[in-house]
Image (cartoon, rainbow, N blue to C red; front, top):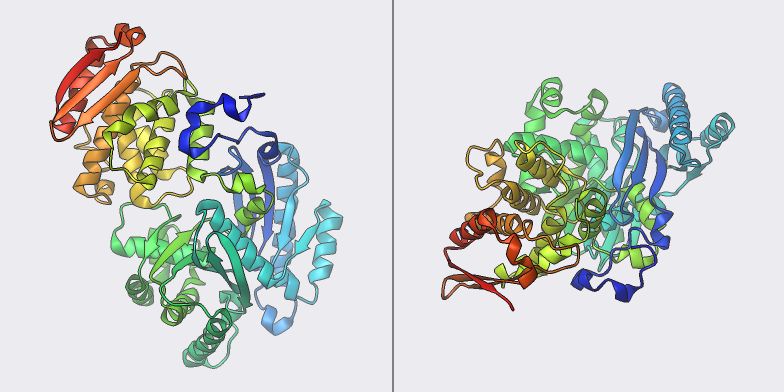
Length: 515
């Protein structure tokens, strides 16, 4: 696509032209970010499609830099040593990857500690890395921008919890509004005197003050950002027996959070963290974080709760994007990048999308983007062994780092791609996950998969249409109108796949060759 004009790519359709390889996105193709928090220090290296990047490298070290800060006013000495060691390691890794210099920010612990400036000077002296200390409002804004990386146009309240602070940011029409900060991080709450009753009153008073400052209406969506929130969500999954473990876009209700709070209080934390795969350091903070979340929900009364794995680090990436890049759909951009990198015939995805779309006349824009994503991904797993290709497709769709996808949409996408390579789903080890879809959605995904299975046999070229499908539900007929050039491709196997698609639709098949 190098050197193309916008007018040279007519097949991008309603989704706009892919821009991950444009000059304005190239500078974001691989970017390293270090987040020095009160509880952990993390390096993330983003790579790939700039609008929805993959995590090329992601490493976290629990340092508890802010432990004891309220009492001593200083950074935790042991945590400081661990943080410096982690930053030295991350700097060396960045040099090896050829991505120096890193972008690094420090949050509550470093900005509040009396020796924060000394620590920053030590880091720069020992590693050459400059730490940018951001205030609480800026931390809230960047976290909210991280949410926008995955949910363009979002509205609601972003709640980001760290070790020493908790931030809130308002989102409306994809724009970050008011931002506030508070000392509600679990490391600080550990140091509140007076027992559980005093701690509860302390949390309640601060949340009440935050609510007054935000003046936020009830009934909005609450986005949860931060490791402690994700740990609570993971416990909620365990309690419910939820069939997926992807935390991004996991949804909870107020009632579920209350039930999980009780579940945590009644459980052996060591045994529970083992079942949930949560570190000992993180699990020790979960009961305190649960108290905060319970009070936030009680006060702000959200209509629903969504977990975001995207936060301050992703917000830093979003900060560097031009608006034209921000406006792109993260799901479609990621799938376009995957097709360009891994498909045997890059560029055929949009052709396949036009081919299968007539089977879904009532699809709204949300359904169309999932169909489009499936068509872009239909051939990216061809290197997998044929016996496991269907499973690999399902795994890729349901576990990959894809933004802008609800869990049910992940399963729909995965099931469609499974049926791209397999007629059967019964007996699959994924049957429990299929429960996230209703019967109509399961049938739709099967039809989409069978249609892609048919279309994949009619490759004429990346931008050449082999023909069209015409589905008439009332008459129960399915007609394929083949271009004359595509007639030789419609052999025995292809005809069988067309029959299979017609059967899935309960329609009578008809083949027409266009002159």
